[in-house]
Length: 626
Image (cartoon, rainbow, N blue to C red; front, side, top):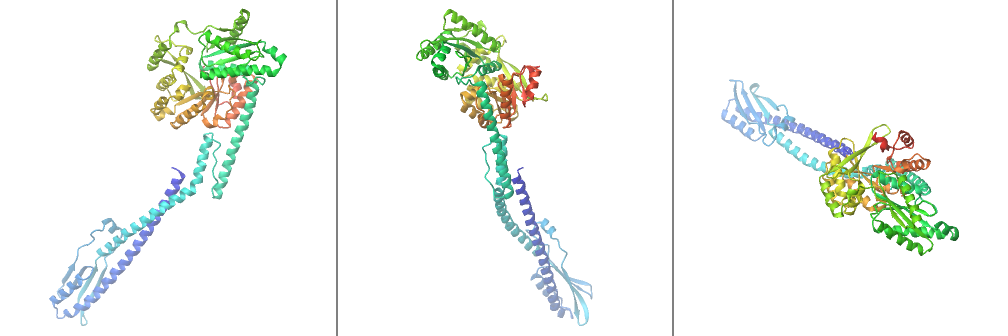
């Protein structure tokens, strides 16, 4: 119950008790007054009646006596008149029944009163001949008291309602600063440091609000300061100062992230002959012009194809290009080489570009792929070839047309033909934060299919939502009390049908599901990811960010997305000094927002011990599988 409701209830109960007490005192006072009036009336009737019938007692005239008593009895509010004649012990009695129609019995019992009785001796000369007894009737008293009570209830009830409304409005106005303070506390919890509270008039609350606003400003300033330090460090380690491209380390970190997540991709090694000589003879500006032309052509080529790419510099004339999709034929490579050579010829005719490409997968390390590419590049230079595509490691019997793959995938996903593997994220004390789900598709014989076979088809035909939904349902079927994390594709986040399916999940299951979004997808379609995050947060799901720190992107987006956690890129979990410096700066920046950081690709105890020292909240990798 909110403080507003508690205070309002206390005030209303106090007000109600006050009204009931005042009404009770009022009724009691009126009851006493009416009782006195009844007693006075009874005394008056007894006196006057005694004087009127005294002459009829000696000699005794029963007719006149009875008629006089009857007239007095009928004209007053009396319950009983009794005359006891001493001569023969006879009685003349008149009585009325209890007349309390319309008055509840419980009300009568609340104001129960003693009988009002007056006795007066009747004399003849100096001799008492009879005793007159008159008893007042309380029925009229109760009726008047009940009428008064109903009127008071109506008046006090109306007054109570009016005062309750004004009290509610006034209390709402008084406690509004407390509601603002609660909203700011919630905003801080949600990592939103732009929320500010208007200063209230109350001195005590004004001090609290000023303090909260000041602390919020400090947190925001600290976040941006550490974020700026991280950007400087990223620029130094991940961005090549001469070319403005990614460094060798940055490209390898991104490639490692692809391999860790099972996402297929292609690594291209580019050699531009005579580029170093161009720099020596015509200067840095001409060299940079060639690099900019290469970067511009890559942007035009792959952004139109909606393909994620990363371009980095390896040496003065060697470059690496990482694509998020496989290159299926050497013909496409040749077209790319011809287009690039055309751009370079416009700058310097002697420049000649050679390109070799290979698919990357979790089966081969990045170092091995680079070695194969370097050997193939030398072979191309010796044979005077402009491009080469290394043979794919995918099974030869997996060749299908796109339409065949589409039908096959829909059938397997409809049957939830999936094999799930869960990798735990552990805390320093050995507990599990959650388990990330890795899924592989099973063929008709129950064998796992290589991701490089079907992921491109899923992306081409926008089947990501169907795949992720199948993974979600199967993960929940086998779920325990530990939350599961599922990495989503961009096509899933764009699919409204996926959102509709999430709304059908019960609240308890929603608390057991975490959705992960790669920072690569943030770079590609930030607005899509942001709107998706806002929707699922309203549905009760949580979101995490994966592959953070590899691309060199600023962390400003964390304030908008407000994730439950972030996972550092696998390349940052290495124990060399540069990786540790990057990861420590990333951790400090993210922790300023109250967001835990998880290190990935952790393989051994010594690596884990080093990572715990820099404030990592959780670890994930081969080490946590053991």
